[in-house]
Image 1: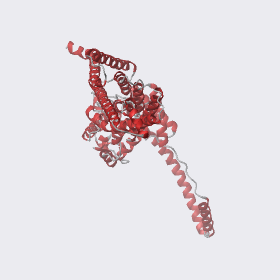
Image 2: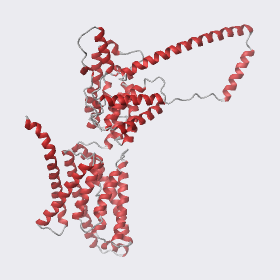
Image 3: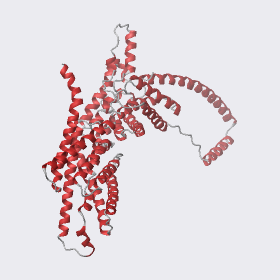
Length: 558
């Protein structure tokens, strides 16, 4: 027993560094096998020296990122994927270099005249900028994140610096294009993001190509044109390579890119169509939540697309029993009135299990499926729990009500996006119970709900800070205030007012004394009715306040 309890800690402290070092060695050996044929030195000691330099450098870069970058926490699967993409990029670079050398060898066999004769004097380094060095980094960023792209760019530049000694500008070029391409994929809204990233890479490549001409003091117009041409080709190839390989990496590695999330965000998805038809109240609730979560996620630097798409699918389980949820019920009809509190709680909790099952059947990404149970966490269904306690007290039963029967199974939110969705779910529902949704009332409700969830401990396992909760509250208040804003009553045009006055004057002239008496009696009755309506309105307002309190209690707000 003691050995089993020690093994996980040992694996964390010993095996993980060994895994990363072993993968660094694999990357270094693969680079040597692929690129060493382009070098003149083939001695075993020289090869071992190159492998040692690259392996140690890759391992140190990984360890440095592990200690300095908060979001760089790779699992074994991530390290394997990172190594595979690195080796694949090195192979692509070797293929590109081979093509460049072959083209130059062929051009030199031709008998060119005039301006084209300059082509025979082109150096191989001038064509290297057409190789899509940045494709691997862009792919890593799309699948794993910007921190992994940072590590990948440094590692690839180290390899290029060792195996391309003839061009001192190339390592800096690799880092610059990798990073600018990765930054171009940070905010993905459509497939055109690949093109935008490729354009950025092409522009930076062109600048480096021009800088290389200046560094080598080669001011010929032909070399200038070659540099710009290779820049355009390099950017174009980056776009083709990334868009073609990204789906393969997603499928084999189990990653979810923003592009995949955008594909399932369409309202034509079968699950969302079913939700909008069978549970329109829940569908509307999910759409409003999507706006709230997207705004808050952008404010704190979380994944806006993941947050919005997860909101669309977080309550799809309610399609099974839509009329048992208040947002889909007709006024005055509540099916829970005929059920026991425990049965009602069981039906309410079942939408989580049903939602997970439906999401898996439609093969939604795992990261979206995980949000379905996390948006409730282990929260208590307070309305039915209080109802059960009251019934037990009225029946004078000695046994206490089991809280676990009225609690969601969890887990608690594990990410920032999950925490924001949990907050938005309760706040959006509670905002519908405010009789007069002014900005101050909405702000007070938002702050009260966030404080309640925070104090309950449901946010303990996600990484939301107090500063971020404050930003989330401001975003929620702004979005809800915009939705429930008051409109002014527009006056009728002057022409219609004049027509009404003329019609009224004409009718007064045609009115007989008997009719005047009848109108006087009608006026008295109207005044009496107005007084009665005013009294009824005051009574109704008081009842609405009581109802609001009851609705808030059902939503878990005391």
